Length: 166
Image (tube, rainbow, N blue to C red; front, side, top):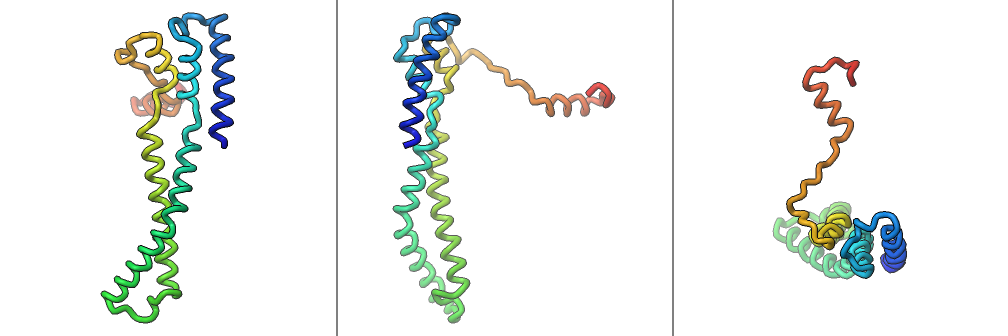
């Protein structure tokens, strides 16, 4: 639900942004239609994480019965193979510990898969997509990141500058 509400708000914001850019920064949207600008804006700023989080939760719910069945069968096989004592029987602390953490691990795996898809399928950033839509060759553009303040200080200290220059 949050995704649908956010997308509706983003479409409204994109239409306002497009009309505002037409008034004072027309060169930034030159050759880009309003529909294309809205699509680029929504793709660039949509809260995709909500969809992937929902998929992770749904997959965790769906995998739980199968995981419990498999984990119980594995526990029975291991305890029978090593001829374990009754302390390792179902219902005792070693079994509870194993089942709890193995089930949490299965759920974490669902989150891992969802996070992998989230990062692998990330769309192009808004500014880069807008530049591409205008026809600018962005593959040749190098965008310099500003060095964080702590990194500048670290370089100055490493070069042996006096502390009063910091």
